[in-house]
Image 1: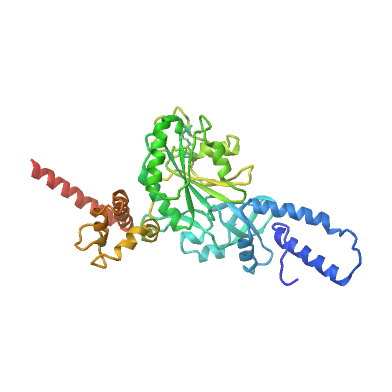
Image 2: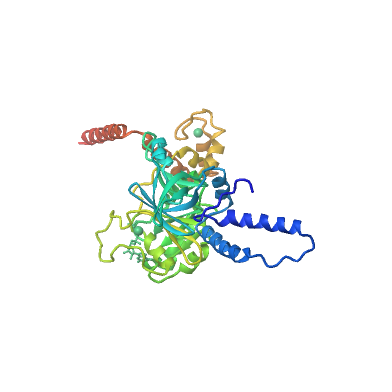
Length: 401
Ligand SMILES: Nc1nc2c(ncn2[C@@H]2O[C@H](COP(=O)(O)OP(=O)(O)OP(=O)(O)O)[C@@H](O)[C@H]2O)c(=O)[nH]1
Ligand SMILES: [Mg+2]
Ligand SMILES: [Zn+2]
């Protein structure tokens, strides 16, 4: 039986495997003999249920093989569903536990990524009915992170996400370029993005269709779901988009309705949302912590606090994904370090001039690149740059007098 470990906390896949092996052995030693119904049947059924539960949390063969090769005996696996100060809420087939990481792990951790994040699968040892110790993080399939500068540690939004829902409210805060920033983050982490246009009750159908067309013109192959938690339009479509065992992260500015949408999917008002009367709530975050929720249809969703500023984690690779066309064109530029803004012999500018490259796409590329350079600066550099800019403006104004 090799080194298949079995433990009350995780059982599932390993135990089922054990049962299969046993059946084959019995059949081989007693050829032609009718074997009485094995007493294991009841056990297998229980384990089937256990297994289904683990899968409902997003567990699959990928994590199972990583766990097996982790060589940690007396261990089991669980998923991080919420993160509190130095404590994690984790969940597996047996229920929820509060967990801390081991001192050894703490000692070895050098950057944020070495600590568990919501969505992670962790190797644990149970202490009692309520508490466990996290001994290891299983390798991540995908990771969603934002980074404000090279000198700052990236923040992990969540791990092991299948689809990132980028939500914008269609009214006052709507901004086409903002989608692009989130797409960069998703691309970086190997995650497919999809758009939710919420609060469609606040605009006319013509206006909604205009927006949808704009999005389609700018981005190829992006799924768009239009919703309203007031009229309930699009909520079935959203629920149907979500599949069993997959994990969806809700991203977007504060107040766009992320928590309201998740409450609708949960069919109960579990998450606190912003008071309608709170008209001055702009910039205030109603949701303050990341948390994972499990839907009746088997989908897994993560609610996030509204993002103030989307940092550009290692932007260059993300830009490459989104602006393949520009990267491709730039091979024809005269200078290798061409910035595609003013250089003679620039193939990108030429393509814009000849209308072979969409002007909006080009402008957005330049803007994103500038922002990423700004994010890479230290705070001191930013202050200096801002001061220089301030001086420049003042001087220009003086000259106008
Ligand atoms: N008109 C309209 N209002 C909505 C809709 N969905 C949500 N709202 C309102 O928008 C406000 C903000 O909703 P929340 O769900 O708290 O927004 P959030 O994105 O979770 O915000 P943070 O937690 O701060 O990031 C609340 O007052 C909701 O009632 C909608 O479809 N239409
Ligand atoms: Mg919220
Ligand atoms: Zn160029």
